[in-house]
Image (cartoon, rainbow, N blue to C red; front, side, top):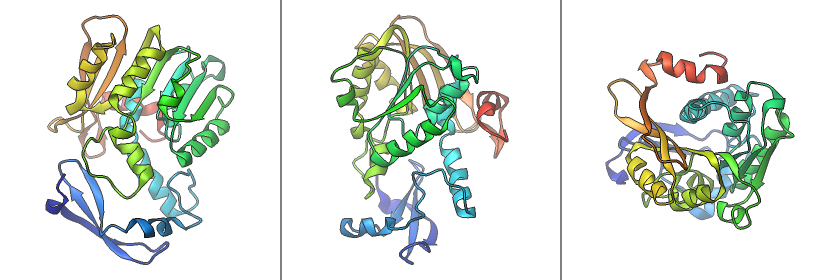
Length: 294
């Protein structure tokens, strides 16, 4: 990734803590923004010394926090499609790399919207701040007695497996480029070396029940590699949904479901928008239960 060719996206100022001005550079190939200039490692912590820092909270006390969560909701829309692509599962569920618990909570909500229909949902999260927020979110939900989050890496969790799972889900980190930011938590969430595909697939093969489903969302460019790796451990594609932003845009994401039985997978395509904020009927049908306005 060559940021020397990136375009200036916007110039901004940090009014909360440092009072410094900086630029956000846009990498068009990967559609990500990079802070420029980047702070040195010895000064990085000082930018987070602010009691109202909201990266891992759900606070909506101010206009700024409301704007933050509006953008956050947009960022998780791909995850919503993963949950709604399949029928509710009442067995035991595992969410690998749970973050703040959004996918687990959606699964719980989708189980007929009745607490008694929710099976046990275990979640794993390695980042401490995200883990603490996940626990808080679980405890505040109607399904708190059936949602459990473990502060551990996947390797620790599978070291002594005690249960099999009827559904395993993951929105794994998938950037494989050498570039890293100065934010360790962000890198854990975004880069594949924090949770290698090999480690994820091996865990799924170990923990999935005989009739279980293993579901992931990954970049389309990694689809064939991921499918091949799964087949090597006798996990076979059951359904493949390829996602694109508009009818004319390139495919960006693949929603993959695997099982232990080899068959011809169902392959389809999902388009999110016809035009800006004009969502397709298929996307609305998939996401309407999770948004107040959809």
